[in-house]
Amino acid sequence: MLLREYIALLLRYWPVLVVLPLLTAGLSTLTLLGRTPVFQTTVRLMVTQAPEPDPELPLPPLDVGTTWLTTAYILDDLPAVISSALFATDVQAAMAAQGYALEVPAIQGGLRVETTHRSVLLSATAATPELAVAMAQAAVTSLREGGLVYWGRDPAGGLQVQVIDPPGAAASSQSLTGLVREVGLRVALALVAAVGIALGLAYLDDRIYHARQAERWTGAPVLAVIPKE
Image (tube, rainbow, N blue to C red; front, side, top):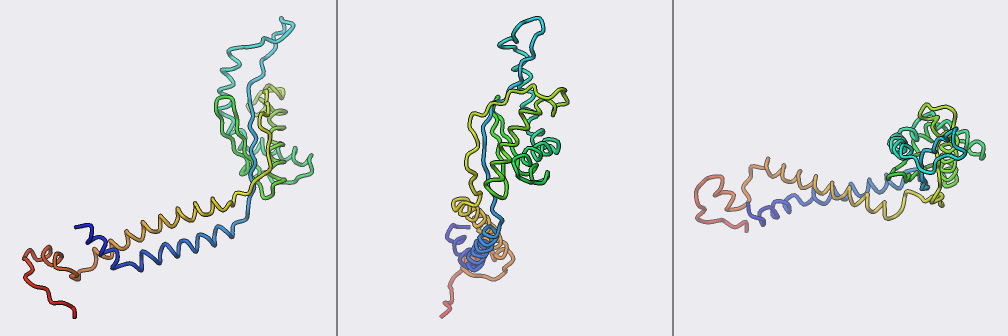
C-alpha cells in the first residue's frame, strides 16, 4: 500500500484521530489538576562504616580496608532499611520531638534513597513543605543514632553519616512543566491507539473506495471509473 493510500485511509477516519487524543488531553488535565499536591526535598549524605577501635592501640586506625568493603555491603542494603517499618517508626519519633505528627505508612511511602558509591541521595515527600523537610531531617537523625542497629548489630551507632548537601526548601511535584510533559505523553499514546483503531476499522471495512483497491481485490484491471457527480 502506497503512502498516499495510508494517508487517505487515516483521513477517512479522522474523527477517531481527533476525538480520542482531545478526550485524553481533557481528562488527563482534569485528573492531574485534581491531584492533592505533594512536596519533595532532598539531602545528600556520605555514609561509611565507622572504624572499630583496636583496644591495643591508643587511637583507632585511620584507614582499614575492611571498613570500606563492609560499607559497600551496608549501602546495598540501605534502600531496604530506609523503606522499613522499623526505620519509619524511629523517624516518626524524631519528627514528634520536632512537633510534627505523621503516620508510619506515610513515612515509608515518602522516603526514597539512591546510592552512588558512598554517596546517598535521600528524598522525602509529604503533603506540606514543612513535613517534607522535617521528615528528611528526622531520617538523617535516625540513621545517625540507630546506625548498624538496623542491620541487627548492638549497640547503636557504627555509621558515620555526613551531610554534604542539606535539605532545601521543598518544591511541589505539580509543576507546569511536569503537567505538560505527562499530558503530552498521554496524548501521544492516545494518538498511537487512534491510528491502530483506524487501521482496524479499515481492515473490517469491505467497501471499495478507489480503483487500485478494486484491482487488488479482483485481480482485473480497471478500465473506467464512474465519477460520483
